[in-house]
Length: 364
Image (cartoon, rainbow, N blue to C red; front, side):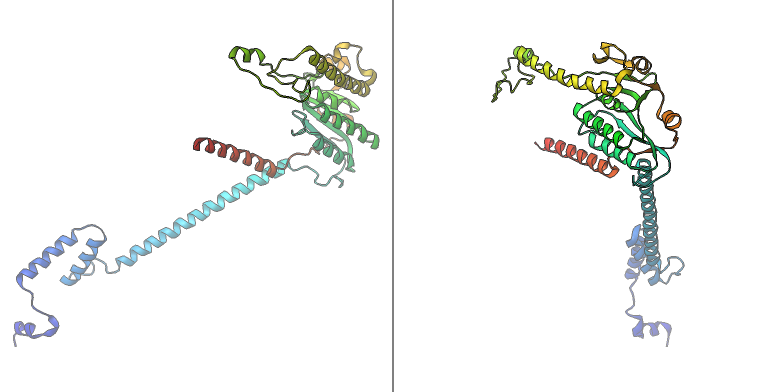
């Protein structure tokens, strides 16, 4: 039997192709193999196998290799992301730890002795109930400083333009009480850039006061300030409508005129507080004060001038007082500061409130 007859009769070989089918298949193979991408490669691989081409021209397992490359690439990307995540977490932790160490008091428990030292309490900024330099915080620091068994002396370091006479009076009274309760522990006030008004009100409670030669000291006086817009409203044609129960209830209203009776009353009030201030200064400084009426006029002087006027006892810094006067060079800070987390939460809340307010304004 001839080969041609064998091919025609063999059922496994299928129906014989015509010349037109063969030509059409060849055209499809050339067309598909020229296509880029997955479809072209699949058709090219199929046609190559059908045509009996070598497996080396197009690998049969290329799909598996592509998937493996994709998986490995994804794995490397995830590993890189994890590394960056760990890095940033470590960086944030280090930053928070550094802040904690910076702001952490030298003695967490004021009742635990930490060796002989000079205790320091800072009063910085405006003295007010809602400020950092408020009576509650300062008094808490002072009590902790006196309570510690290793405290050889206390320094109240003041850098304040003044503030509330009530808050300053609280602190002054507490210093006097603590000095009487702990007569063996001296307390000194050290002035930084400025110690005026309420700041000096506190300083005079100390045993002695030290300052830098260029420090600003004094301002023993009382004031009440504000603005009046009566003439401006008149020129603009604006009418002020104020309803009160009490003849003088609205006398501090900036949009209403102030009469002479109300002005005299305010001056009497300020004069009474001024007298309290003068009495506290005289009680604290005694005969060290120069006989000069200008001391109580509200004027200020340099630290060098203040020594001559008796407002200050000497020139020196906190380190100088700790080393040369108290005799304990080591300084331990007992200042009560707002916790870092509380400050962060407070500022975050303010920022969120401002953002929400801005968004609400835009929506309107």
